[in-house]
Length: 331
Image (cartoon, rainbow, N blue to C red):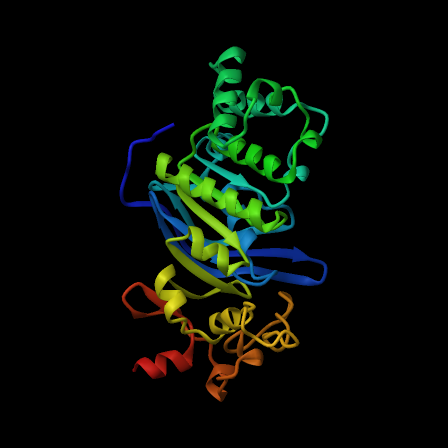
């Protein structure tokens, strides 16, 4: 499954805005985020629940559910405008060029079809010319690639006959069976125990090196980010607050929110009766905020933070931050 190595931009997201129009009002799930992804790069997107991580991924896949809608910005994949795709073009794009792995495989795998049939169907949906026998052969090769043994027997089994870790391996095989150039992994290890989680992460790193695909890895776990990602974006309230190469971010986080996330990671030598938290709650997405969205929870908050929203600015090479305090420190 080796693919030719490419360089340059695979994906460019510019000023993406996603809203849900509900009876309670407009819910701004994503508020003008921008980033790009190179071939052969793994980018992590982290943040608390409700920060907009998954909705921006669904926008790329064309999977936003009504009443959700992309209301602004652009998504460019290999120079093509994804938001301008017709339904037919999007159906072809989804699966063959970009694939997604979801958090819980049991909600994605059909319980009444064998795993083999589901892999074959996924492949033949995008390759109309492939025979069922050739599709079955490719499906078995993919199961072997993701570390599943005795594939002839496994092809005939149903999802409930697999462990949680094995089901997630099946989902990875299904995502990769059409050789996509971009894989979006939405918290794929959250429901797994630590040992299986480590195996899945190692598998994804190995497959990424073999295929040279780009990966967007969505998670709330900074430990996972450290293991697999090259670059990371920290999201809060639909905005990117900080982005940097992963090593740089772990060595010198700048935004108070990023620092707060790191302080929340339990340490072996800390007082077992005390766990650090970030005070307050993420604002409801229906709330209209002035100034910095993180201001009510921020230990560095000033009057300017409450009045004016800062821009995402490059404060060091490759390191961007959205914080008045950091910008003043670097001035």
